[in-house]
Image (cartoon, rainbow over all chains, first blue to last red; front, top):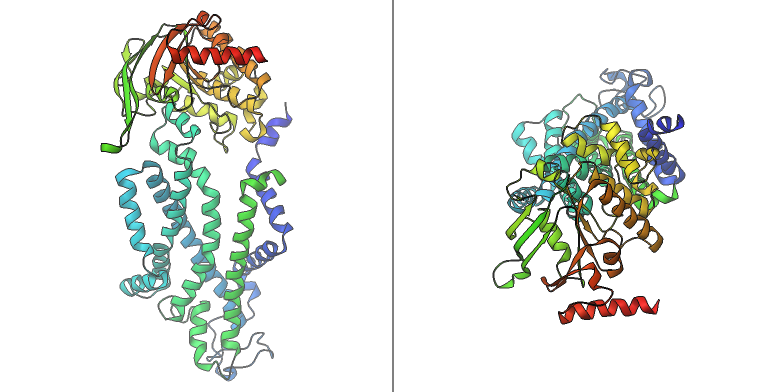
Length: 293
Length: 253
């Protein structure tokens, strides 16, 4: 009897540990997890990891090649590229975090309500989603940023506004598959309101696939943010945003390859890591794999 | 607590305009308080639809359904939940896969603001013959029969007067079927529930029901007492055929 409550309490923790061990078993998702932990640790300990002040200009060392005190070289104003990348990890993580906490709930709420309620509400909500989906997301975010004014915060808002429709679609499709299920009918017979059914019965069912989609989306978010930064509409100088670093380094690309190579590699690694992790999560959260754990 | 059920001219059609399909052209029957009433018939004859209409899961029907003398359409949602509950056919689909038994049983109590939840949940589980420790199990940790017991406990926890049983045993294997049927029979004896039971199986009717109706294409062909099965006392040709086929099948075994 005493063992039972003990095994019940950390159930979410237990599930998290199961998922983690499952992810670590496959090399690709283990790589994704590794890169992301490095990213998070780098962002957290940026002041200690960075060798230089990311904003400190040193005009004696302009465009210095890697080595000689500068691990990844120095840029056109003599700023240490390694330190700028380390501090840039914070910006990248902020973008991902803010976009995800905006996009996930919006997509989930829109998708589940329109899927469960159906009828006219569904039609209206899905047509709005269609309008957002019919633009290429980068072009739409460009339009939003152009309207709001170029800055990092506006870039985050713009990306958030363009990234929710696929998630809403996914959540709606998931909801449609089990809105007629007997357990939903049973909940209705117990007097549960539509809101209660959506929150308590439908959302938990949609959550795994939305989480997976969100993780896969993060790669796109990073690339869009980098793209906006590259076009000068995202983070403004002197912020060490990776996309913006490539944009300014482009002019010196032929002679000083390190200006674009290292930020480019960072973007590549992180977006690849998110994709691999998303794939791994899809396997880990798949109900068919439950039995294997 | 017990209540009668009276259904008059219950009719429903799905679809609109020329494509509309009339599933129930006008069903009428009444069930006495504490009675077990069976609905039998072939697949697609509208048995389950009757239950879904009575429980208001499908609400665009016409006609009149009275439970304990009150029109179901006039009973507020929360009162209706405490008047009738339903047990579904497939115990694998009727329990939320991500909710523990505790959540399944606690939700109705929370919705209706009932206190003393822990004691009520324990009593409901004991009533259906499950140990109290099962509160912390998830559906995938239960067998089919145990799941169906949990589904019955969920239906009982609001202490309804009428229980609608939609083929409660057809998804279970034979030995478990008998257990569930005995459980349902015992609960009716103890609590005086009124049952309306949909089934394919005349043996189940013979075991459980006081009277039963034979349905064909949405219409009730004949309402018979249980005793009519043994000697095939039906007069309508389809009902006779159905009972004869069943008796022949039983005889072969």
